Each structure stands twice: as C-alpha cells, then as structure tokens.
Length: 123
Image 1: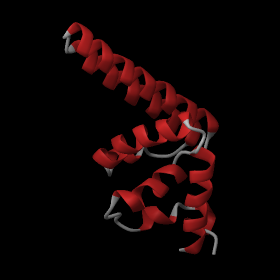
Image 2: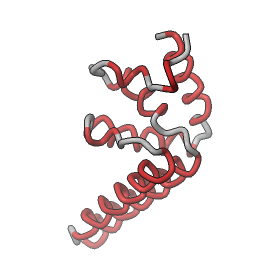
Image 3: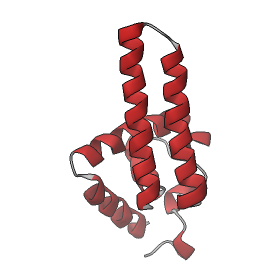
C-alpha cells in the first residue's frame, strides 16, 4: 500500500532503532540537489576533522559543523522542502549522514533508497 499523499510513513510513529531509522532518513533525502548538498557538507566536515587533527585547532570542529549542517539544511529547506531529521533524531541523523555519504561513495544510495521505498509501501 502506498503512503497517503506521499507522507513518509516512518514519520508517523516513534522510531526505536537505527535499523528502522535509516530507511526513514533516506525517504527524507530523495531530491538530487539535497543529496548532493549533504554529500558536500559531510565531505567538508570530514576535511575539517582532518584539519583539526593536523593543526590541533578546535575552530575546525566548529567550521565543520557549520559546513555540514549549513549545506544539509539548505538542501532540506530549499530543495527537499521538509524539516531536517536532526531536530527529532539528532544522533541517528548525524550517523545517517555518514552512512549516506558512504553509500554515495560506493554507489549503493539508489539501491538503499529503493529498498526504503519498498519497506514504506508495505506499511
């Protein structure tokens, strides 16, 4: 059964595990521009972590957070047109940013999104 009016059915109930959260997260990240902005933001965050390690300057942690969240939130507010999962599930959302980044690097994002859609259709 398809979700009513395109609603992410995972959002209708409290999610209790990361295994169930990640499909919800993917369904909130379907716009190609939003996904690219997440990839850029997460990549910049990783770069800033590397600079923090090399230089010892904690300012890079702040810069990384601004880059990571800035790019992601622009993607959500202007392209995906939804509320970032960060506000309801901060730790799982952050973890999912890195999982999606890895999925994009290895070419698994589209397959995992398709699986998430199939799970959503079953609900």
